[in-house]
Length: 134
Image (tube, rainbow, N blue to C red):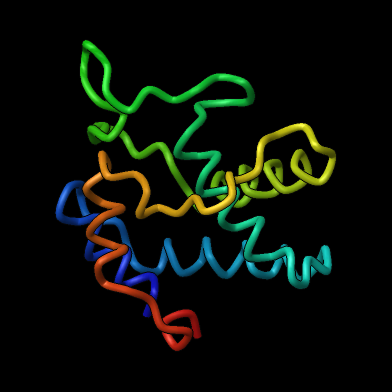
């Protein structure tokens, strides 16, 4: 269900992204969090990863969403993502965070706070239910 929700929202701006891709990515991340016994920290890892991917291009390099030559939100012609790349990036973030090598989300940060990103606004308006994740 959550994969379809995100897929539908993203398809307004980009070529169709399969709900199965999103679902598989989320499932792999949740399995990883279970493997490392993240427990109560799991939500902090997930939120921190969203923050990091939104605020930084890479470790120590801030992301500029809009620049003189375009926007990082613009689509690309060639697919640059897959489930494995997403999960590897998530694992790298979690390990770096556990070793205090990367920033965590500031207190109170949420995707709603990024008003300059329409996709985040559309997703946050829809709201979430725990049942969406099952």
